[in-house]
Image (cartoon, rainbow, N blue to C red; front, side, top):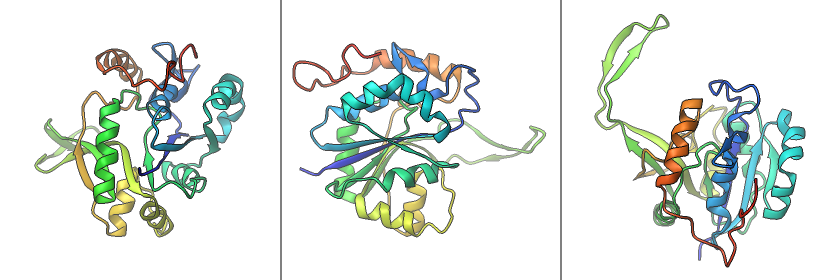
Length: 243
């Protein structure tokens, strides 16, 4: 059985979330923090050998106060991230255990994930070495200027919106990051593309939304209700009773 390490980036500034009490990964969603929903989908899996949460150094004290018991009980490794997503993921990659065959990167603020979807993306990565979820763009696309005036209509033919999880053979992702030459990519697939390795698209779901705003948070509350119930690890789910 292939073994997977999971990296959850959660070090962003949450500038669009507009909540003076919480950054988006730590905001409550159906009774627990958003990042816990994302983490729990991986922690019960036999093929996941490590879960790394990457946070902003400025959040460390508050995070430890609120979540140190969860982290200790669940065996999650927490590392400090950097100024950009690519720097934070690189910090997580540096801590991946050598026994992991594959590395899965999943947004900590993307909590509406089904077990069957993880099965599918893991299997696709095992076959191709690099696989991501994405959904085809369905709306009409407009390119606008700084004054919010339309400059042109962009064809959506062949365009897909990338999601996570994004899963790669371990050495492929490590090598691609090592040779990125300062590329400030917004997802891991872009770095692997620059490295010259093909990346397989697996059709995702609009339910697998990334929370960026308070409206997204409200939508996620409803999306969670539509997901299949998670698999149980033994008689008790690892997050049972945790706030």
